[in-house]
Image 1: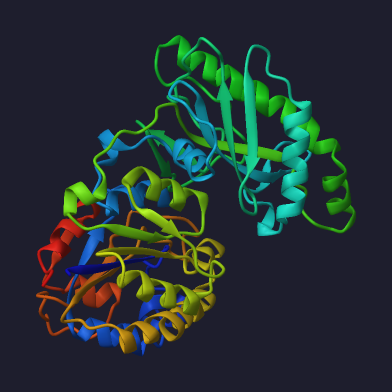
Image 2: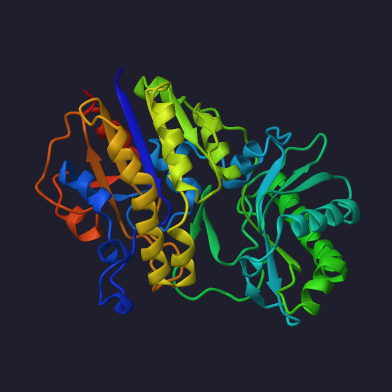
Length: 418
């Protein structure tokens, strides 16, 4: 059976960093197992969505799985709603949400509550929002997922809402249906949602989002969870940032029909589960988010049952956002030791094509996603070798594969299947 293992390392791409003697975390990391795979394969660079685009993970993964985000993408809100198995219909409005911290002047102190909001606290806050916010003429569900993350779904019976509304989260802007990370100076204030098209559905959606935010601010400010957090010296989760609305159920060609490979996906987050669902992949879980040994074992087990396995490994992205190249380097070494070492010992590269890349770059010097291309390695099957030794930005820039767009990666990799 032809088999393909597709691994995306979240936010692994980076830029030379002065704290690492002007190397990237990938270049500075000790990664003997990744290097062994690199020596046996061919390399290149990938623009996950397009040149000049700083993508969010969802559109990047969607593109890296071979789909055209400009025509097929339904919006992150829709994907996360589906990943949480929420009741969503075309004409509803689905929006990705972050609990955030603002100061007394309304300035955003932290978009993620310092990454310190517990699931228990978030669920209590979400319950209060659901019980105390009242949107006249509309119903809604505000559902917490993991950490600071949540999803808002709004429905107006007899009306079709439009997802073509701007974000209230100032760190991201809308480019058509796409959510794109802003580069450069970002406003410190939560934005007002505005319609992005001249339609009643967009105007009504923007009005409902703004009314939701107005009422939610009052509910969160007065909640005992936040009062207790302030007493303990912690950031309060006293605001909700909304972005990447969508209003249509997607109808795209399943990945099996495109590649003739039956795919399983190892998923942790609702967005990953949503992408798997709409692309026709069967979802599985293995251990915690950073339990790389468990994910390696599960990936190998799935390879015995499926012709394609997609694995999204979290870890490198957060220290990129935090601007900490040393932690990013350490995470990469952890992934190499716990995931790729097990892979090397238990996989036959004559029978399996392994593809390793990233969903986007998160340079520590920027503390944000960037439009930089990310490294790509294809090894096994009929891929051959290009004589380069490491899976790094520098070596991949010299590789035989040259420069690709994300939507072309899997199709190119499938030509190397044995």
